Image (cartoon, rainbow, N blue to C red; front, side, top):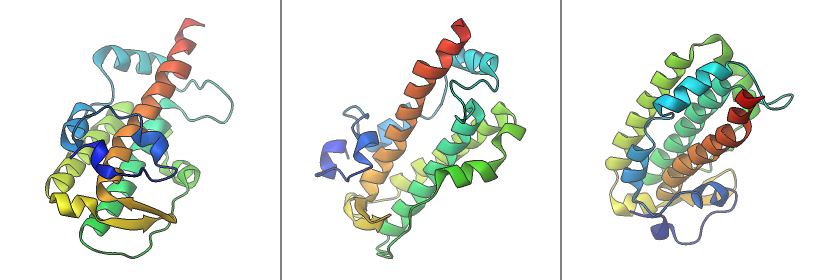
Length: 174
């Protein structure tokens, strides 16, 4: 299933979903299964804990945030696809980041966890029928389908990769 199968894009989540090119969900999840190319990985290692502005996350904190977001969105997709219409709350990304202790973990451990979480998401979404993917539930007062949540995962990753490319990598030239 493709982005166009979502229909009307859900508010808030649309800013991420619109970043995804016209691919089917499973191909998109596979395409973005690795967070960094070899060249990007070397740059990320060189960056260490540098941030582009005060109170911004380090690269390790961004990777942890991507992991946390993917877990939350996959959980929501699981519930909705199985017909659970319980209204699900939002989550506080800053609270999760503060409690994650990402800067005390190695980048390699975080990237390994990211890849495992992505494999789990791939298995979850591949288990859903098209009808299940289109079931909408309520997350953080927003009506959204499992399909849209899957594309949010991809678009959210693209968003943060853009931030890394445009705001973090230029730090290496300073």
